[in-house]
Length: 222
Image (cartoon, rainbow, N blue to C red; front, top):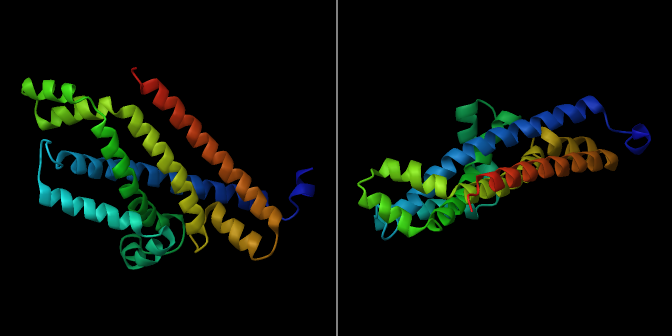
């Protein structure tokens, strides 16, 4: 039955492409989570009225975040070719896509982190400061735990964007389902391959969305 619906699909190629997409997405989500939270914390803490209030520092960080958010992902990949080649030793394959994926998504997530932190009850922060809590304690025991549901929702949205980014990266040789759909599907006019890759990408998106929604509900204390 499947062979009739997808006569040009080779299952081993489809499985390999799926593994590459999951690899790129998983590693880039982890990297985005780390760098996005760091950038988001810096944006929040250096803003007016917060612990590390510093207008110049906040302006520099915000500018960097805004610039990288404004660059279309496909152009960012090209701009980062020299950097990618330097740290990865190649500009092709799933591993080579990671720098662009992380650098492209981290500023986007950083803004979500900043928004989530701004929603934390000011009274809780003031109480922690009044008790003499160190900045590290405020961050680890108040800010991040209180904003955790929003942070998880944000990284879920970002992860889904990253899945689409991997498909774009695949079009220039990064591997994954995007690469398979473009090279073995579109270029050969074998649209059953394109359709099969699309189905799998949608399925992966649903999995990430389900995990994110489930985790966010579990972490929500309200």
